[in-house]
Length: 105
Image 1 (cartoon, one colour):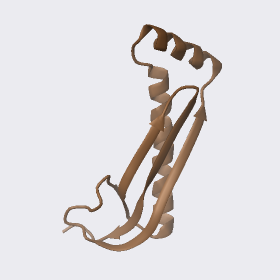
Image 2: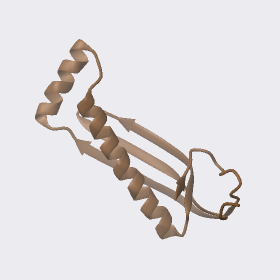
Image 3: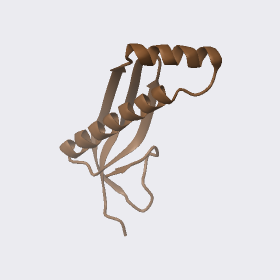
Image 4: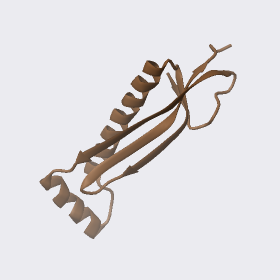
């Protein structure tokens, strides 16, 4: 399945629009991870724990919108937008439009 942030796919005309597909994933942070994040916030630097959790949430959300698009009859998703945030609660929201595109030429 093609997933694109653009509203079209080069050389693959859209034949049918199936509607909006979206997914929201909210994951809690455990107590120890919260302490590590506080130290990282205080001293600076990247938090590998939060980055890992955000990537996990993003993969879950992408899998979810793929399934929803296929269930709606689409073979691609266009106009995808991703919003995410970290902290005590990790959240990812993904939305796009499920479409059917012609086969590659």
